Amino acid sequence: MSAKALLRQSPIFAALDEPALERLAARCVTRTVGPGHVLFTTGEECRGLYFVEAGRVRIYRTGPEGKEQVLHVEGPGRPVAELPLFDGGPYPASAITIEETRLVFLPRADFEHLYRAYPDLAHAIIQGLGRRLRHLVHVAETLAFRDVAARLALLLVGYAERSGRPTSAGIVVTLDRTQEELALEIGAARESVSRALKQLRRTGLIQSAGGDQLIIPDVARLRDLLPSGDANGSLPP
Image (cartoon, rainbow, N blue to C red):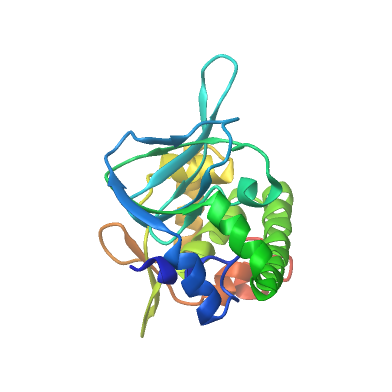
């Protein structure tokens, strides 16, 4: 996948026109690193923005006693470390590759130069940040007020919208995560994730497709979690 295509997939850069995307893509650097490669650590000065072209990157924080808390895992097409690129602060977490990973890197200095030089670029990015903020508010609300099944549903909808493959049966999603990794991403116990997956299958919101793939017949229905006309968005027991 080209650097321009990766930028286009990012919610922040999605509204940029072709000339602006090409200007950003021309400043990107691509390289492949092995598993266990540390991209950055918590508190380190931001050097730029990473995009995962292939492979996976684990984002985590380490507690005072050395315990690691995984925040999320980013796969192909996903950006890594968006926030410090814009606010000038340090990296808020650490990042390490899980497997051999091909990365596209946009240096912060080049980004800031283009941001100041081209008003159209700045305007489009501000709009993208606004959409991103609205999405994060929705995610925070879901994590705070909804059960594990609803949190998992939101996560699966994100996978479907970013990398799902449309078929006549619905959207096919490759779930390249263990249940433990899913649990860490939504702030739940692994056993709770296992029960939530069974609930979603039982109600027809997801279907197994063999291996690590599943089918989402109706993404809108999964997003709203309204099976059987339940207006409160809760799943039946």
